[in-house]
Length: 156
Image (cartoon, rainbow, N blue to C red; front, side):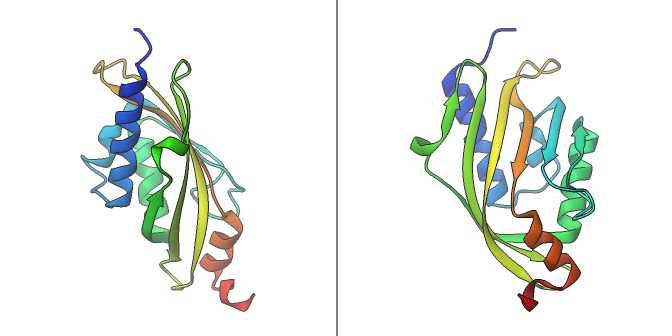
């Protein structure tokens, strides 16, 4: 397998981010961006939210991550910085991109606006040969999520 070329990396990144911003269905649309051995990790203490601080490996686990996160939070107005501002290492197949959205805890209705960072590692899927997201790392405001999930965000 040869590493994907930069145009393939950028195309997969655009497709994935577009699927997130339009809130495409989890299956088959969103999950189609991932390789069979996808690894997802949203950084943070697991005690703050059930989808934080652990590895989700494989497509079934990716589905579990999005279902778990989606059962606790919803988002609106998601947007990402322009491609010219992305950090792209074509040799490593890595893209780092900043995004913004308003998140709302489903149980409490409390919400907050935040910026977040995604690091995507993109490569050839061993099963299909297509260029897919192989690693999806997330850094976000876990403190706000924790407080909103507990109904305490509005008290600050």
